[in-house]
Length: 150
Length: 385
Ligand SMILES: [Zn+2]
Image 1 (cartoon, rainbow over the protein chains, first blue to last red):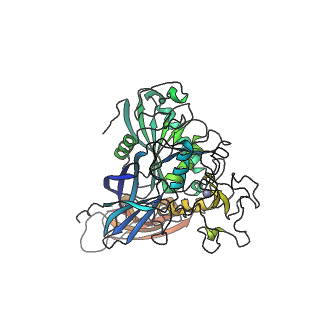
Image 2 (image 1 turned 90 degrees about the vertical axis):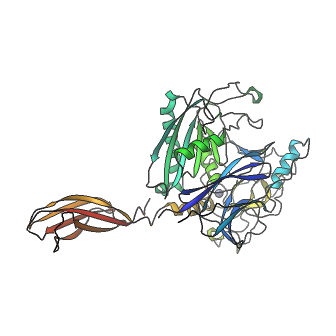
Image 3 (image 1 turned 180 degrees about the vertical axis):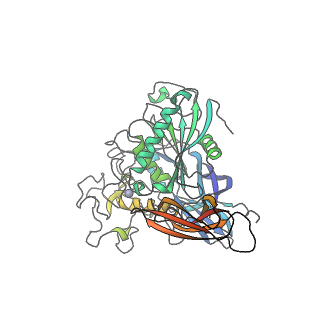
């Protein structure tokens, strides 16, 4: 039988993230990544937690709040490159399973320090590039919508 | 909800169909900068991505995990804005999702109104997992992210596969520079700082017992497999091991040293190559729930008819996949209380290596005609790709 999921739409500006919507959808979620053994890791993930703060589901994402962008190679001999974004803002989606007992979704991210005024391009590159590998910290936590009545 | 007015949402068309979207990975391709008269070109462009996807390992083996939809959106004008500030032609065109080059001052950085894209797609295909926006422009460019955007020219399909690696499968970049090999300011990308990346395809760890892709490393392969002799530069020496060897190759995740990638080459490093074994394994694990080995039960009526009084009659149904677990049930639909009306038997023919013919013979046990229906239950569905 089809599983129910919750589609979470987040928006962000700098390192501030907001939950814009949470909608139940009959579809399959992507499977969970490991729910333990990742202390100190860098990157970005969301965790679905229960009332006792146990992690029920975790999904690692590749930089959904990027402070740099990947510029495409024009030919197969060409390289991908990265370039800093002056004012990071945008939105992203995460589909999480609708697990009984799930209460909150936590957003964990490695993010660079805020840009100082009049930063050089070299300094921006170093700051953004180093920021993405700091140990991730919880930057926001949102309640999940109450279960539908059965 | 339609914030844009420079065109029209025509609707969604499913171009790869593998059953209920509640069970599949649903990929949506959306048009931008195609005029009404160019929608046939969009259909061709969308199909070209589908063809590239299923020609790329490991997707070659997982076609049945996907539903692919095309969402046809027309634009008043063709193309995308191409500001002169980045050396573009200065074209400012009226398109549905307002796609423009020259974001962050980079001409190739082509971005559209991703909120509008999300709203249109969610209305058309609510169960979407990944959206790719195809922009009808001869200027090269695009951008990654949750809703990735590509100008449809050059090798865009190959770049789109790399971006799907990020957006759908959480894969990291395996290249070892930031602004470009030799283009980074001296010292900035030499040594990967401490902090194990959360992504599955890059690591700081070269310990055979604990490296995250250790299961794919042969005992005879040295770790690290290839070190970078000069951390001030990209590691561009020849591979010391045969192509396809999984190990730990220094130079990954934007740094020359201290971070390792699983193979010498990978699509997450360079679009001219296939995904490495670790990236493929990650994609397979992610797609596994969508492969539908245990769908079902899936029920229906295969045929109906009348069996004459006291007679027998045989139907057959052919070309059913041999992997399906099928149960047949025949029931009378003509009421006649008091005694059994029919008996049936199922005979089975292996008509080919992968297909089965079922022969259903129904005997009418009564002195009157009886109408029947033959029902099936497929306990496990597709099972193969
Ligand atoms: Zn790889």
